[in-house]
Image (cartoon, rainbow, N blue to C red; front, side, top):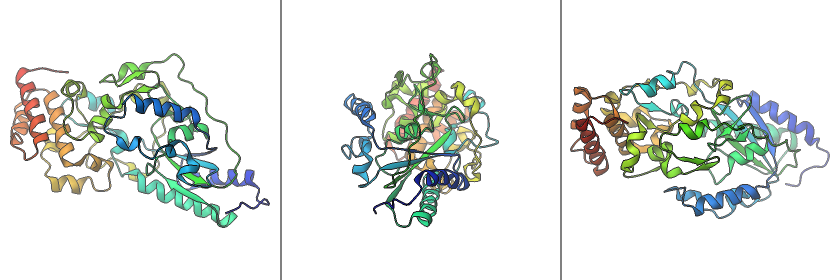
Length: 358
């Protein structure tokens, strides 16, 4: 499409932000497509091998940092934010301190956000179409090689903190991002500036030392990577520091001072399901594969798979306070069909026998 010169793009940009709010997004911003510095940072990160088994991060050549190569004709990117911190969630620190409970990252307690946000972005595109007619666009929510944090920063939604998570001065960091690539020459917003100052709480708080320094994340040590992306065995030296974190990790966000401004989710689908905001490890470890698939239907937890779920819980049980219930749970899966599960159960039993703690 060749944009019509008679369109008031400044007014359209204002309308787009209003429509985004009406669709349930907390905020929207508009950026250009220049990401040269971020592309260089990504290339260094990949060259250092800090992506681990996430080979998809190295695929697609330069498309990840060059929106117009991913979606030809793209001139602007509309970035949106949706808050996910569920109301009524068991306090994160209390769950982390309860060695008998399993900690699930707050973003994964309710419905998987991908389809929900993509549908809302599609509706936003339809609203735009109603004003400008046919135009080029593509909606993305973790569904393509996109440097979403860099684009959101350039759209004014927040800055990339020292833990590499996007932070908003008005909403902390508990939110999802989505993008609408478009060929419309909309006016761009002012990029967000950094406000971490001298604070290094996130670096100090990382249980496995995955944040090597400001803006330097070694994904291979990150608990989110270990419990979700990594297939197979978790490196033994990282198992004890994982504590009771069975899906993802929020520690770097929990200690961030800016999260005193975190916004509670208005989307009811993000409310915790099956009491996973503090469920007991022994109970979760007893789930059959059928129960796992049924209870995690439509949730991000599905990504780890049943084998990964049991593997992660076995590690947490190894770190749990010693009890007959914990030992019985581990022994019940000592002969599990999965070699990966058996390995981690054996480690956990040995750790329980030794009486070791993180």
